[in-house]
Length: 257
Image 1 (cartoon, one colour):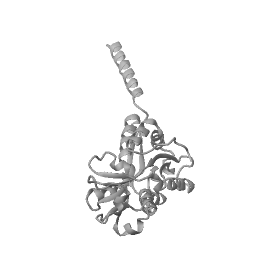
Image 2: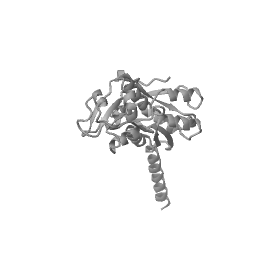
Image 3: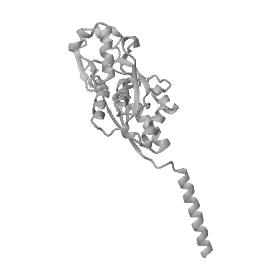
Image 4: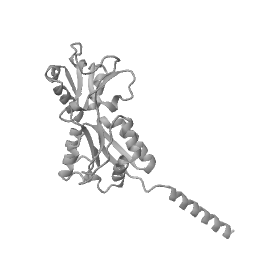
């Protein structure tokens, strides 16, 4: 009986060891601040990352400028996915981001959008007297808002349109203004409407605004967090890049800056 018990114990020990071998390294979590335009892509990326590594990603969404301010005021974020390149670079220069961790994860595209078919037919739509409200996001805090202003200025329409502008704190609010009918048209991110089959949109030519180069940075608070570093590595990989492209962004070969 003693020999049988010893054998059972040995078999159990082997099975337990085999089970441990199949489990990834102890999972951790990372707090990630994400520019609002990247909401849907990063949700997919985070799910794929968790399935592959077991690590949890806690996502917060908002305007890049607001996140920058929060990070300088000791917010607990460990990774920042901005909608521009200036703020991640500045955080690294100020010692709040890890030097040499900055890279471009996506290049965004601006569109003029209506939830109704046939409304948006190109830049001429902006000249129509029947359009009472045009939605944008805060140009000081959100790069897509700055791109919208640049576009209107390049078309020499900004002064005429200024009284019609309704401003959201971020690109999500700018989209919601159009979605809820508080504005007939609005400047939004292509990623927000790429799956929309019912509305109408005009892809704003990229010569009308500066490229929306979206950079990521590992923040100092995440420097010792394996999950934070692993997430940024995953963001550079082919699985993430395929998701990013699916939502209408351009991707570039990641380069530390």
